[in-house]
Length: 109
Image (tube, rainbow, N blue to C red; front, side):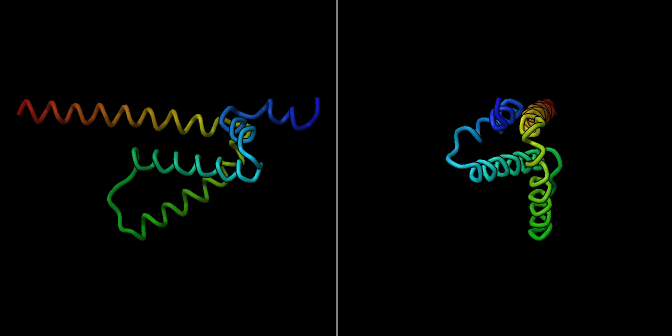
C-alpha cells in the first residue's frame, strides 16, 4: 500500500470526498476551510450570537477564520466537519422547539 492510499483511507468522509473529487489538493484544502468556516459561523449564529456592532461582528468573523484554519488541519483525521454538522442540527432543532413554545405561549395568553 502506498502512502497516498493510506492517507485517503484514514481521512474522515468529508475531507476524503473533497480531496478525491476536486481538481487539486490546494483547491480541496480551501474548500475544506470554507466548509468549516461556514459551519462554524452557522453554529455561532444559532447558538451564541447576540446583536453586536459591525466591528465586533468583524472581530468574531476574524477569530472564526483563525480557529477554522486550525480546525482544517484537524479535519483530515478527526470528525470536525461532521461534529459541526451535528451541532448545527441540534441547534436548529432547539430553535424550532423554542419558536413553537413561544408561539403556543402567545396563543394561550
